[in-house]
Length: 169
Image (cartoon, rainbow, N blue to C red; front, top):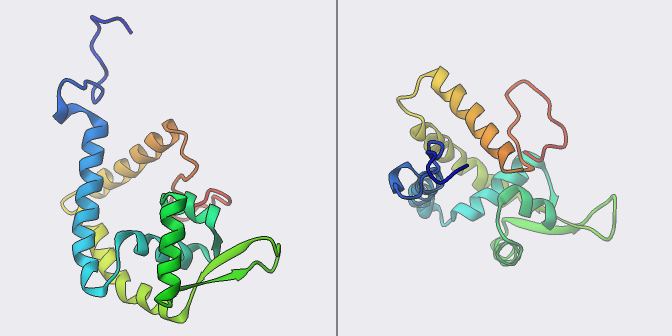
């Protein structure tokens, strides 16, 4: 691309409000901030919720899998799992398939907390798309899938009703 040719929409860093990575960061930061406020009365952070949600939906996972699925760095995730274990939300156990692998699973208390918070999480997800038509929502998901693919993300959403074994979602 030459210096005098216009940048694609969303790529011009001289106009902050038009710079797509900045806008996506604002969306993420706003979502996390609002969600944290909703979770705070339950003593749960956004990162704790991510771990609960992933394990509840995907079953017990090892640390490597949790890093990929929660997008929490390993050092932070290890500390988080330690804290969650102390709070009886999760437990570590040796994999039945490979004794060299330690998996993290939910405790009964962790499942109870998940079910208590699920309506709050659903409301949170609904609030972010309020006012959008079904077509706009479908297009949003398609667009996000394309962005994730462009970024080489290993976690790509599976459309409802389709199987995408091994996608990690």
